[in-house]
Image (cartoon, helix red, strand yellow):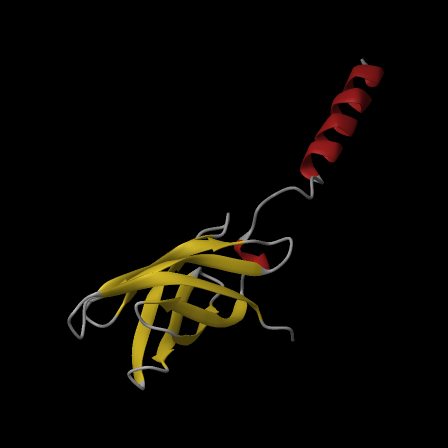
Length: 125
């Protein structure tokens, strides 16, 4: 009986100490990069400990700023909106291994609607 108990206890210890668990903590912090397409510029956003994302896009063509808000999941999926109220979207994936991100964006204001892709990385501390 003791051997069975020790075997089960050992199994639970190894299962409980797994380091493969995904957490939002790998994504918390400031991210920045550039976007391009029918407009271009740079962006910055901050991911908070609850996964909420807030930031801005700055158009170097129109010399305008646009608000970005959204959420990041513990697997790095990013879903957000551009503008307030929502005039477009900002979506993509953040990677925990190399601290990089990429995705797409749209913005319907001002007309005509614009769209493209973005790439960035987590800022070093």
